[in-house]
Length: 250
Image 1 (tube, one colour):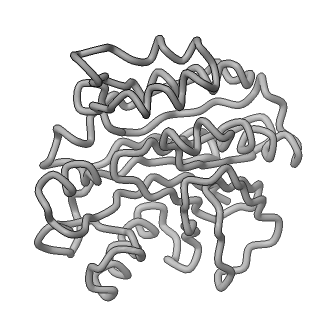
Image 2 (cartoon, one colour):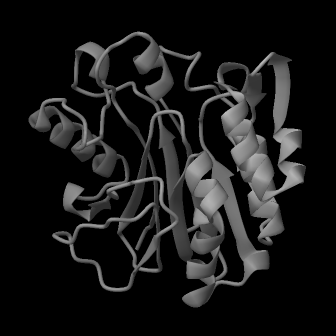
């Protein structure tokens, strides 16, 4: 199962956990090379992603994500290069930009006027430290105009599933008192946090207003999605990663 669309020469898709070859807690479309899943299964799953776009798997770029605000610009694609970033942009054709998530939000960007695409991994740390603004800036650095950039936010942990404590609340509010609007108090030292609303605001203050969302909760929809938080609570030891991808086709 997936949530995708064709936009002229640009094709994108938010893939669920379904349709792959992995088993057990990685069942089934685990695309995370950083997981402890069988590497052969992960490679097969990544081939399925590339096949969806009618491309070879060596055209699929994923990042070594660390919840940073670092963004790469791919000007000349090298399939052997490792990308230690949490965002990536390009205007190269037939290069699939992939973001791996399991509760954090994947954000896909596209400028249909200039045929420029971008993707970033936005958990609260990355969103707070500027991965969204840096991805937008990287797109404008290679020719985009902010008013032409559209974006889509994929499945991520929902507000009702994202319980946090006061220390988390204080971190975000210390950056801006306005961030308190993304929290709902549910008791002493307990809040619910809306990651999606926080991200939408970050997009808007950075000049991107054309925003769509796949409003599904990765934590509560176990049949459809992997979830880091759910895996911790079930003491599974490790977890799979969904992939979200975007490409400019020839």
